[in-house]
Each structure stands twice: as structure tokens, then as C-alpha cells.
Amino acid sequence: MTTPAAAHAATADPSHPAGRFAGRRVLVTGAAGGLGRELVERLRAEGADVVGTDVPGPAVDELGLLAHDLADADALPALVEAVLGRLGGLDVLCNIAGYQRFATVEELDAGLLRRHLEVNAVAPLLLVRAFADALSAAPDGRGNVVTVASISALMGQPYNAAYCASKAAVLLGMRALAVELAARRIRVNCVSPGGIDTPMVQAAAAGLPQDADWSLIAKSQSVIPGFMPPGDVAEAVLFLASDAARSITAANLVVDRGVIW
Image (cartoon, rainbow, N blue to C red; front, top):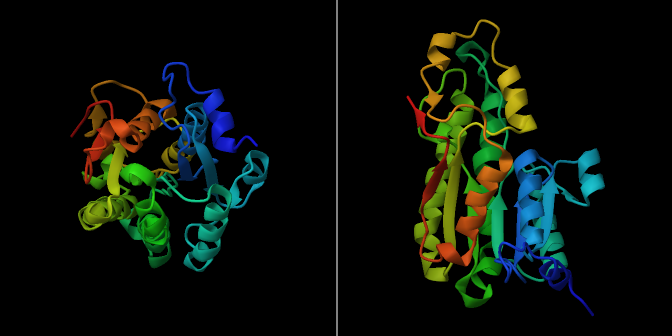
């Protein structure tokens, strides 16, 4: 009987003849979005057996993903059971899902702050806790976590306080877990992208306040102009998840086209 992982390995990316992720079991959150979908495709092309999750919606059914709202902590045990039931274990956890909505200081409220924190910070940390035993049991010490933080975790951005706070929280939270989980042979790293050409980022940009002060926004710019294609960030995630990064943990790989402030 041919396993899904073996089937994927047979069609591995020719630029990686052996398939960097042949036989690896991977969970990707936010798998219906631009970056998450790109990452799932690349992982499968390199031999991985992948389970993707996203919030309930047409794309989840279309892509065969597990429906899961990251803000619903009570649903986490069922997700863990479903993922381990499909994969039989876990080698890589990719925290890709995110939430962003610009707001002026007058528009900030507890609900908006909680939504950002729950999706961007609380959920990824709880996912690491939930899958720590499985990742620790991964053969050859290959269990690892890659979480998408953001350059918003590293600088103050106008109209983006909730997002900045949530991404800073997840970045330092993951670094703390990296130190703690090293003894269990689990690597934990982050990728911090700048602007990516994805529906979420486009929708967030379109939601800037009409009276936004563009002199504040223009203070931050990239040396290489324009938004990045999702594949550029996906490659950074793949690198940190692969054996090539086996000596890297508690790192934050910035992929932002040279943002200066």
C-alpha cells in the first residue's frame, strides 16, 4: 500500500532530487490563504504529507482542509486528534494563519485587541503546547516549529497597534519556547515578513482609515519596492523547517525587501 507521503515523494520538486520533506508529516494553519496555500503546495511537491487547517468556508471544503477557528481554544483537542489521526505523528508545525485590521487609536477596543492576540499569539503558542509530545517523538530530532511573525513585531507602525502587539507577543513567546523545548529536541523559529501580495494583506491595506496620515506611513519603506510574492516567504519557512537549519533555533528570519524606518 502506498502512503500519501510516499506518493508525494514520487513527484518531489526536481530542484531537490531527494525531496527535502520526503516522509515528513506537517501541519499548516491558514492553509487556504495566499502564503499558507503556497506553502502546502511546495511541501507536497517536496514529499511531505501535509494537513492544512483554516476557518470554515468554501475554500476549506474545496481544498480538503480541516475547518478550525484558531480563536476557539475549546476546539483544539479535536484538532489535535484529527491531525494525529491523519498523519500518525507530527514532524513540523507551521503557524501561518494570521489576522490584521488597521484601526486608529480611537477605534481600538477590547474586541479588536483580543481577536488579534487570540489568532496571532495565543493560538500559535497553544498549538505548540498541544503538539509538543508529538514533535518531541519525531525521529532523528527533526521535530520543529516555524511561526510567521512580522516586521510589525519589530517596529511601531501607525494604525497597526493591535497587530504590532500581537506579533511582538508571538515572536518573544516562540523564542521562550525555543529555549524551553531544546531539551526535548524541538527547534522553534520565526519568519518575519514585510508586505506580502496576499488577499489578507491587500484587504488590510484597503482598510486603512480614510483620514490616515500618509507622512507617518511613508516613513517605512523597502529598499526593493513592491509587495513580495508569497513564494519568497514560503521558501524562508521551508528552509527553517528543513534539515539545512538543524542547528538553528530561537531565530527570527526577516524577509522584508530591506525595510528601513
